[in-house]
Length: 414
Image (cartoon, rainbow, N blue to C red; front, side, top):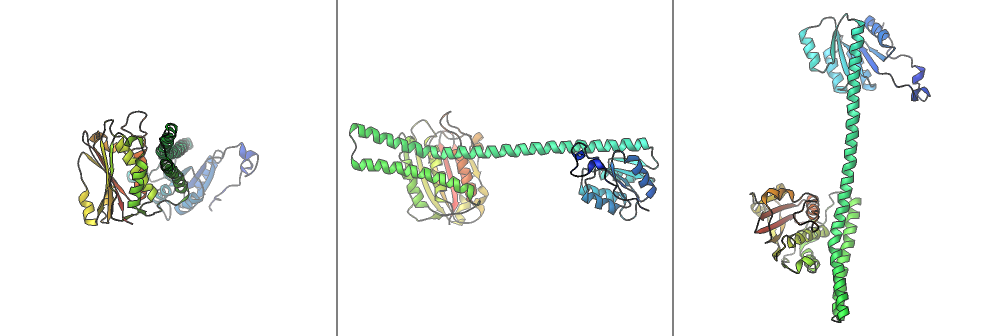
């Protein structure tokens, strides 16, 4: 006759009792053996220190493990139905951290090898000394507890890493917003300062005042649009697509960049395309990409230099042919250029200092900058990367030290 599977609960472990808060739960030992005498004997031996569950066959043992947290299993090797090895294999599938002690009266080298192969903790031959059995179970429980401690520590470390990553992302978003707002705000303040100086010297007429106010308002409107974009970024589903008129964006770029301080000592030429092209990217995002790349190009050298911005409409058969490879080339999402779909390339090219091939792959990393301390934050290209990623675009960088750099962004046609 099989002994009961569960025992009457100890009063110290009744849920909701005062004792539950002070008395730790006992470890759970499962004895799986088709011999009723062995089950009863082991239950008596271990019941003072363990909550003992018993099973007469492998399937019953698996059912118990499926609904109970078991720490150690004493498993008979020869049972009806599922064999001990099959039961061991299934136990480890259900919970790989349960420690299993194999018990048998007919030990062979092959059965021992199989047991260890499937993760058995130890091997006991019938009959065995009770002291040996207790020590083996205790060692198995200690290893189980040690693994649980490691898992708890790993979980805590992982949670800390997640929290640190959340803080890092928040910090990067805040820094990106500040970076995005800095350029138009600086330009707007510069325009207002110029207007104030011209008013003081009496060199300003009404139409000029109107132009200053219009240009400053354009920059401030751009700031408001950036703030709105980041608010929408937090509220809207990812991957939401929009369309933009490339001609209009290039016109906006020319108007916004012409009063930037970096333009004064350099030559800037922006080619606005005659062809009307609709790109599958939000217009504000595209403008932000071009502003960042153009300002970077204007600041690429302390010497006077030339910056040029131009576009190309690329049919599917021409896209792949534009791909260049070499030590002076780097790609971001370059595999998207092999999709055989019409795209538009927009190139921002300068004849400044250039970027050494050894650091070319690093320029898209957040906070990486080749500019002098206090001039660049390194966030501009990180913003470019994020926008390109979200809009199925690609980026090609070609740079030769002493000759200059060309950043080419690719976006699909709407």
